[in-house]
Length: 159
Image (cartoon, rainbow, N blue to C red; front, top):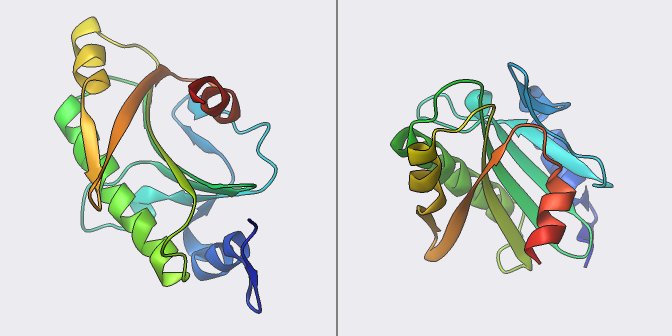
């Protein structure tokens, strides 16, 4: 279900509207989410997108059969669960708002909330793994992983 309109695909519209906050890669200080396997995607810099609240590092939109949204926090140092959850929640609300403004209200949407870290303490890993995020009434798992994983492989492993 590719969303093409007179103004282009959803991803083209997001690229045009958010040109000043586009990123080429989802990486920070040696921590990266690999994006090979995704054919068409847009990455927005969360911190630059919304500077008045805590935001995650990357918001990824990818469209094939379904629309996939990745809300990603990258950590090169200590993970603080409450701060990470706040960032993911804020970025999720922004992402849904972007989709609504692009006239994508009810859609086949897969949303993934990822926290990637170079190192995990057992206690923080368990806290993050057991947290849920509620976005517009829908509860989502938070997926803690190590830096360097592939987004497309992660998605495939969860289906």
